[in-house]
Amino acid sequence: MATPSQPKFDYVVVKVLERLLKDGSALTLVDARTSEEFAEEHVPGAINVGTMELAEFAESRGNTSVGLVVTMCGSTGRGEKAAEILCSHGVDNVQVLQGGLKAWKNAGLPTSGPS
Image (tube, rainbow, N blue to C red; front, side):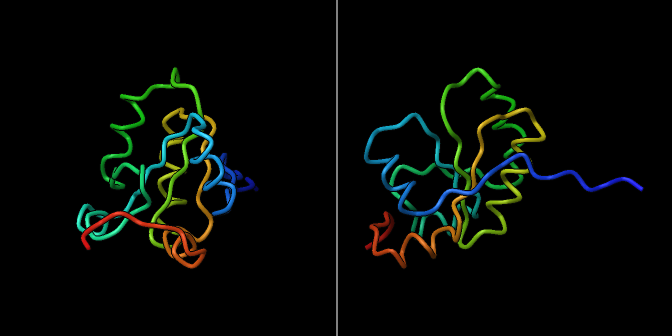
């Protein structure tokens, strides 16, 4: 009987992501929510790549880019799905923001979007 494969990604907590962003670390923060959700509110510096566009994003990025890719969504589910898609398309060094935008806001961190 085959054992299900373990995900190729890890999780990152809000405080660590905040520090990485402040330090200017080489990372790409991918928000996998819809463009409407992203426009309403998002983590500053994030780019919006919906789940339907992730395969194309991974292929255009290739595995030549240096740095971490952090995926996120409103909580965690779509962030995990995004990470799975990126990993399946050969992107290494992928992590998921544990708790997503909800955890970011609960930590009292700023968001971008309409006022």
